Amino acid sequence: MPRQGMGRHGEVAAKDLAEMGFCEKRVQLAHLHGERATPKQRKAMARGQVAHQRYWEEGVAATADRRCFVATFVFGPDASETQVLRAYRDAVLLRQCWGRALVAAYYRVAPMGCRIMARSPGIVIGVRCVLRIVVAWCAKAMGDRGLP
Image 1 (cartoon, rainbow, N blue to C red):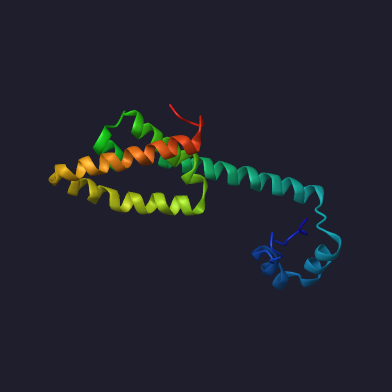
Image 2 (cartoon, one colour):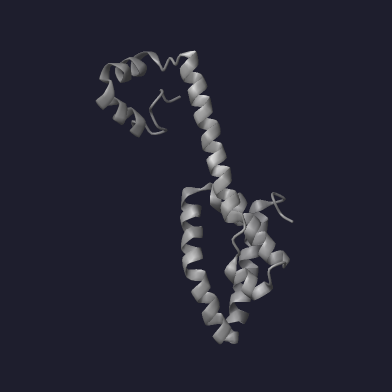
């Protein structure tokens, strides 16, 4: 089991590196004897965790009303395929750093993709076929979580 401040592979946490500049002795004692937080510090850490969770939930709620541009264009806003993709975004992608980056990139390029599809109906047929495969994979990956 890793010690306080040590990652899975023995790395030193960034927090501990920053604290070294503030109080090297405290870091050394915590490394040797473990972290011993006072009751006041434990309450402050708990408040911080609650605030972090609330911030994360507000971020998810703020993006939840965004549309799945391509799925909405191809299937319609209330189609089951669109709902599956939204549920996957909210339950899986937005919970991972790489997933949030992927969603942000998608929101930047998808409107242009929809404009291209509006001018080329043949592309819509191909995109629909590909999206059905993606929807099936997302539904399988999620199981029963969050599906409409």
